Length: 353
Picture 1 (cartoon, rainbow, N blue to C red):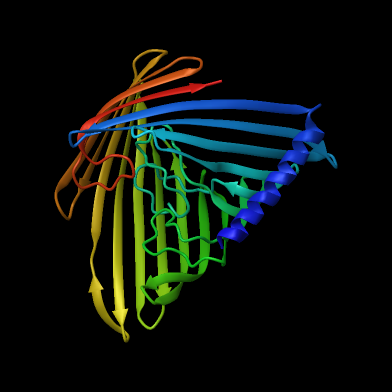
Picture 2 (cartoon, rainbow, N blue to C red):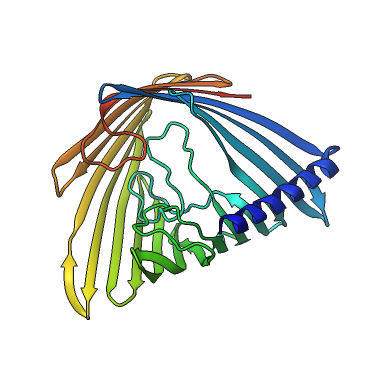
């Protein structure tokens, strides 16, 4: 599987380089993002410095547009351990109403921000200053017709967990899925499905998984949205997961308030009999306030109903033309986060050229 993934990335890289060579006279753009994040918690400092150079080239092709994008991520931690990876590498062919993109890319959808039931393919932490996330190796096709859109994708599976997954995929498989959203009553409705042919269900067992999603958003005096998802895992036993997110936001006097409530219900059946069912609930509230043209304050609170745990983070950001600074205090007791744990301080610096 790793060899196949590398072959696809190598092919995409070669095609990208060829595009760069042939597009040099056209629109060629370069960007460098330098970031640094330090987190002091549990009497230790975790420091991560990264450099993310990117190249992007665009040119007309057959009266349409061809785009090549390459972005790498070089990281160094407090122990001077160096690592790097291909962060994004894709080719896109776009017409007036459609686009096809192949390579390592970001794939996400849905209106929820803090507690996402449709977090299927990314690991974006809502409190992440940089919004970095691993991509998927995929072929994605999207078609737009008015305010409606159709998405179709095929993802090359690997053994890394994506989004809200509990079980990793078996390698060397193609996962397929699609999405259709359309306008409804001054808002929209989205229908999504995804199929994983083989997952690592138990140490020596595999199963298949089928997911369905439904989401929508409407804006009146306030904004309202929902995300609902269901996951069906089938083997000798059966395991189902259902998720629901309800959310709203409201802005006034420079303050934007966002509230979401998340419910998750895993259910397990053995030999057709109900074995285990449990409802988990989380509520979240965030607020942001723009102090002036440079400064913004933000705060988020998460409450886990099952354990009565409360997690809080308060952050300040200052933004210039190329620089962005952040400083925050956090206490994450029970809320799962890919970045924060315990009580501590976080500082972030970002520079773009």
